[in-house]
Length: 615
Image (tube, rainbow, N blue to C red; front, side, top):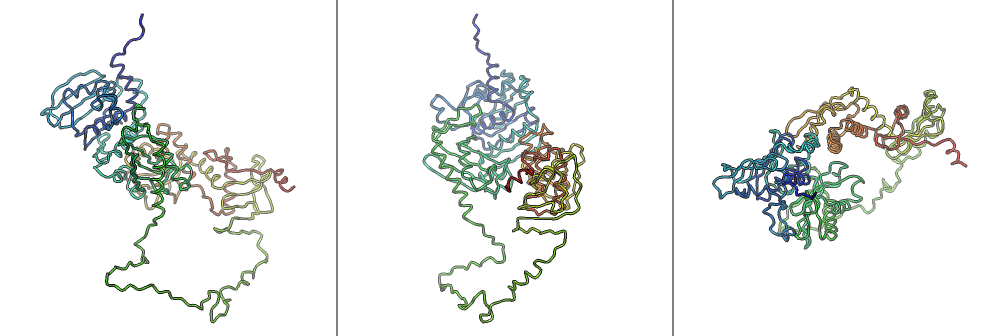
């Protein structure tokens, strides 16, 4: 008996859907790209329940005839290519003819479309690859796709969809990529009846600002290079705006978003020795090349693209980014608002030009005054030694300035040594603590000497405190006299709404003012004076990375970030009581040796190690 059989079209379409349609954001991507290929100048995207219930895309493109509307849902039916050679000269977003067939295989689809030359349009209804109805209808020119109940007939796929917040975040990611690639098109995005974005036709920089906030307007540097191989345009971020998390990084080729680690490395190399290790710059870079020199057909989602001349484009990209950074560094900004700004004279053709004159006193000597007599009034060095060598009080502190490296203090009242804690500083008649380089605390212990990193130690102490308060929901809140206003993008607003309860548990009180504006009215006690805008952006980036479903992990990451931000910084001079507090509180903790992210907080030198150094 023969065992190999041809799959039914419905099953084949569901298999194809597994490659093309992974989640609701995939539906948005495919439908919007079809609208772009249809020449649309206005595209509206309507989402309900993060795409589970509805994904609707309305455009004013050229539309389709009744026959084309029906054929568009067949597998490998496309208007983009006619023969194999067309695959190597693609100028459109879609071309394989799998998207609509894949969507129709796993959802209820309704299409309303009309061409400008037709008096009536077409209404087509499909469910699970089966055409349920097709009839004439009155509808505007263009296309109106409604995709409902995604994965209704594939329960296993629907079960693996993430939370609405995560799925809508994926939709926003696809929307941002398409909107950046096509700034000339007007886009509208609505979610559950709320308008999230209304982007009018604009320049690339204006589109970046509309998507990611007004601050991007002053953070981006333009690049523009044209060669026989490639034209590179776009923007790169200033070095001081680099971030460890959440950097906005986009590559486009011929209007198509792509991932390209090789070109990414070229951009990062341009920032070498300019930004700290581990931080990432923002960039939005567009490549224009001959379609025949790239292959976009190596990945189902067409986000991985092979360049024929990538090794030659790499140094061009590197030079373009370095040139933009060089211009930024070489041209200092001039503040014209200062009162002491030099007056720039107006040029007049008949004005007499005079050579600048230099006036000086030939006999002036800065070391002399009053006809050559040496000054002693302001340089009486003997006064500095008047009290030198006199007896000091038993308890002495040599205060540390910005130029000194050593802080030394003597304490006579010490806590008796505990038998249960071997790291408790020992009672001694000499100085109990020493601060070195504004970074380390040195003290003696029973077995020798311990060196404590003051910032890391305080981070560990605060972390344990925040975690305990979060678990008990007892974190004290400090009210802010003048609330701080923070502006967020729609994508960040969605994430902030999802982590609102977690922020409240750690001590933040935040009010939504509407339009992406938030007011911070309360902060965790002990965190006064921090940059709350930067801190909240870090929390949003953490939520994006970890997801908001695992609240335990997110709370730990949030407490870790807050503790690191609120801990005493390096270079801060500590009083004896402060050094005593840090060491005593650190040694009480069960995990005193490491910070929450695994870095050592202290190191010990045994008595034997110290003795060996003096042999």
